[in-house]
Length: 247
Ligand code: PGA
Image 1 (cartoon, rainbow, N blue to C red):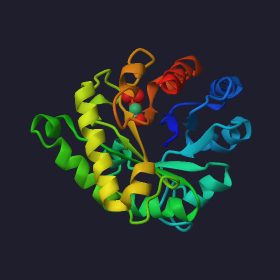
Image 2 (image 1 turned 120 degrees about the vertical axis):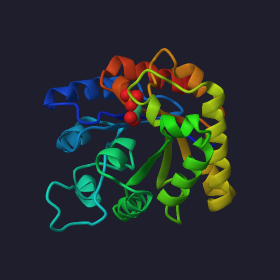
Image 3 (image 1 turned 45 degrees about the vertical axis):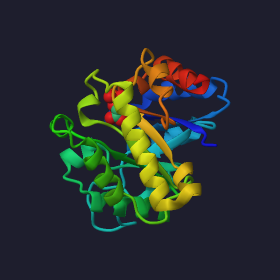
């Protein structure tokens, strides 16, 4: 039985005072069936880890190497050292803004595992790809190319995030979400076997809000959400956590 996961991605948002939102989340009772994760900007990882209680703290990206001459980059071991237990890799904003490829993301995932971080591997189609009817082929190829051999329920989470749904208020239909999640599940089982393929959690991401969360969480093979904008305020994110725990 997979535990559910509500993960918040703060992106490039949050100065020190934003930790008060995390503090509010940490003070709420722990949900029964749901794990919680917040991925603040790297500058806040250490401070966040100190007040997070049983909320997991994650980074938003890591370099493929553990250290070296890579100005401005951050390694998985640095995130781990700062108190993170997870890291997002391959978010579409990284793929687009920094030209990250599936091969890069596979290497970042390996780096994450090396430092005992859970990798939250993101994938999803563009609007053009959706309109061309290529969604299932695109996400299958991203999953294949971005996920190393050896993925397990403990070291890997997969987040399906249609690019056109991120930050736009647009959400695929429940049927469209279910179609992709069922296909991803089948592919994970095919590649990693019944046990681990069924243990890897599949998150939906893209304009998840308190108002649509319950409907999305009722879709088969949706084990939780990766939430951007609505994770910045404790009240909104708590409502999403509550909806997930009740689903
Ligand atoms: P959003 O972002 O919830 O603001 O649409 C989701 C994400 O990019 O992870």
